[in-house]
Length: 249
Image (cartoon, rainbow, N blue to C red):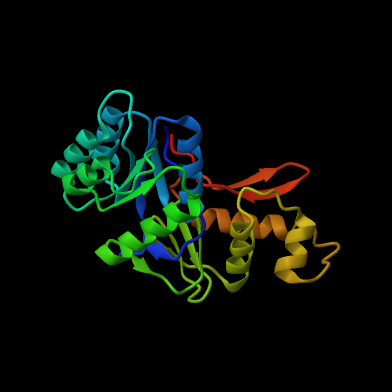
């Protein structure tokens, strides 16, 4: 499964300000999609795997801060995967998932003593997984709580309070108008916005004859945030503009 780019507001980041990384391992395709999507909307970078061997390989490449691991996998015992991850990535946080309804079962005891940091039984709410992961990462010092309002789309982050914009950790300097335009696009990530909507929101005025104003500032913005990088801002002829996470080649 490909990596899910972070999107939306995030209150938890790595100490260096970049999005936290979470690996989700579950053999149920629907559950895997639900979990990766929910965690991606928290502003975290998420990768998924459906088998134990694939999870171990992904962890080596992805270097996650936390792993959500289903105990029941088709090719390996989830506890064996846990032990392997723990031996190779000693600092990674591991949240186990199990279908058992017995909180004090032998499986739970085995999982916790094998090195997991916490345990959730199915069925569970997505909100519970998000909250438990956030709590674990804060307690372990893996991530910091952020009180500023931050918008994240892919590797692009915009702090609405400090008005600092970064891409891949690199600072991008914008004019006040460019900042407002980018903020509007990021608040509506992956949504096509018409020129009329942009003019009304960013300039709060009907510029009439200056119909190319939005296009001109979109061009300025693209030059700054896409210089030497994959494109994020796209034009939909006749419809408007939108911003999406970059697609890496």
